[in-house]
Length: 289
Image (cartoon, rainbow, N blue to C red; front, side, top):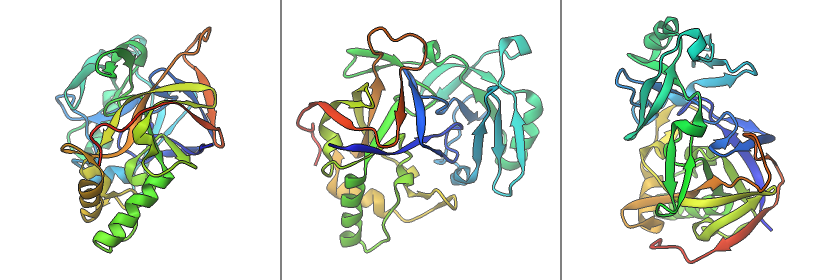
C-alpha cells in the first residue's frame, strides 16, 4: 500500500516551504499553509512567477499567529497577525482572479518588504472557513481554501517524479529535478507512476480526501527552489511531450479534505509521515497522455 513520505506547508505563499513530521489537516488545507501572501497595491498575489527570488525567503509561524520572514541575507522581521481589534480593515486580495477578503499587516512593515521586493504589502487570510469558497468536481462539491492557487491540498508521488526525470534525461539530457519544484503538500511513495491521475478519493491517516482536479503546471516549476533562479525549460517540455491534458501540463493532483462524521472544530485529523494511503475510489484518467 502507498504511504506518506513527505509533508510540506508554505506559510507565506511562494516563499520556501517547511518540512514537517506531522501536521493537522483542516477543511481548507494543512494547518498554517498559505495563510499569508505578498500582494501588489491592487491586491494581486506576488509569486515566483513574477519574482523567482521569493524562493529564498523563509517564513516561520509562531503560536501567537505572528510570522517571522527571513530574507536571503538572513535579515528578518516579525509581523503580528492582523485583526479587527488591532485596527486592521479588510481589503480584497486576488489570486489569479479569485477575489476574497484579507487583512493587511501593520503598515509599518511595508518599508521592510518594499526595500527588498518593491511596492508590496503583506496580507493575511484571517478566516479561511468563510473567506474563500471554491467549487470542485464540476461544481458538485463546495469547499473553502487558503491562499493557494486553487484547492486546499496538493498531492504528488515519487514514482511520477522518477518517471518524469527519466523522460527529461532521454529527451534533453538535463539534470533531474527535485520534488520541491512542484511545491506539494503531500508526497506519496509506493504507487505506480502517474497513479494519482486516477485517484478520485484517497484516505490518508484516516482522513478522506476527494479529488478536485489534476494540477496544471506553469513556469514556476523552472525555478530552482534553493537559489531562486530560473533554470531551463526541460521540465515543461517533458510534461508537454509526455504528460498533458489538452493544453494543460499536468503533474500531481489537488484534493479537498472531507470532514469525518462527528468531527468538530477546525482540525479534521493529524497526518504523519508513514501514514498509509488507501485508494478509496479510482477511475481512468480523463484526457491525459
